[in-house]
Length: 223
Image 1: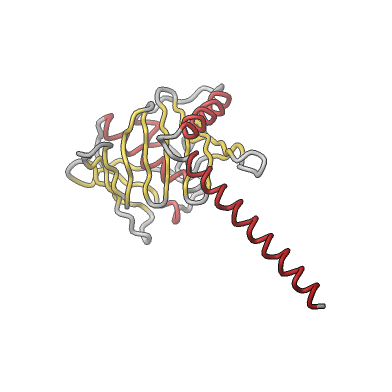
Image 2 (image 1 turned 45 degrees about the horizontal axis):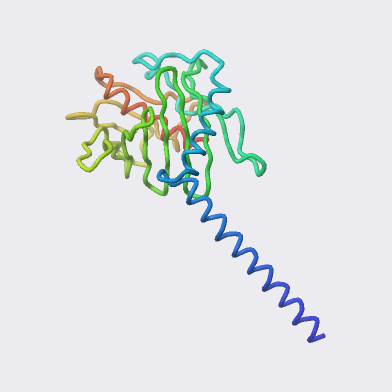
């Protein structure tokens, strides 16, 4: 009996060792895939772009003030990730179901990469923990940390700031010198097709773009 117990214990320890090795290797490979300085990252982004091109056969509405104010916070999922294919795909639409942008992404743990393709621009979004990096048309654009969107670079300036009060249904968004817009709290959205943003004053194209980025990032959480 003791020999059998020792054998079972050895098998169990071997299984735990193999599982541990597999976990370490998987985390290592995942780290490479989501590292913007790696070749694996470039290959992942290109793979996601290819998926978007396949989906972008439909006509996408232009990004302007009208589509921004009609944008739905909740994207429509067209394909869920699976163990055979870890890529998920979807589309951001207006509350009238007009497609505005297609997206494809992949997630591993608390890290994810999403490529969002609109009619006239592309966003790459990399989220790692509480920090989200954004590229616009391949160039560094901004970093979002704790509700504050900062322009990319060492001298990053504040592009927008959200009041992330969990009790609020609409988060105030400061752009420029004061509160300029609102963004729907994903956790408290009551409509099945919630409107993403509300404008409190006319915004410049650059300000609208910052607000759009916030809406996409928050909407992605509803995937």
